[in-house]
Image 1 (tube, helix red, strand yellow):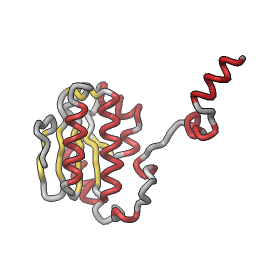
Image 2 (cartoon, rainbow, N blue to C red; image 1 turned 60 degrees about the vertical axis):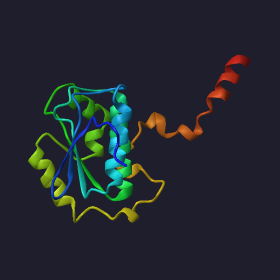
Image 3 (cartoon, rainbow, N blue to C red; image 1 turned 90 degrees about the vertical axis):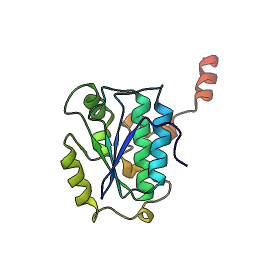
Image 4 (tube, rainbow, N blue to C red; image 1 turned 30 degrees about the horizontal axis):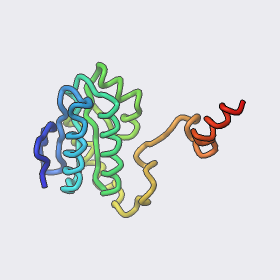
Length: 164
């Protein structure tokens, strides 16, 4: 079932769907964006270009929605590209958060389409990705977060603070 309200504009080409994001991505439209992205991915496009070239502001919730869409697309065997503004705050957010290392990123629509077209033969089938492994989608973490398993749980930390 198609989402009731749409904040993303979708243009279909022969090879992929181009999804244009709104000028501002924040908590006011985050849930609608997530819902629409999942719906689009469930409709099994051959490829997906997420176009943020006209987006002026993207909050952390928008970055999270894009990361999660990437993970879902990888699991479904769908190629994803990111169209970024050439400069400005959204471009900076893409650089800082690592979206450009996770998703092939360019500021030229023709180049993004060509990259997805070239990747068609190189992209592995969906069943070649382990179900629980999302590292293929660039979920790299700083070294300080990699040893998360060896850290004490928050409750244990709080108990130790009370004693000492």
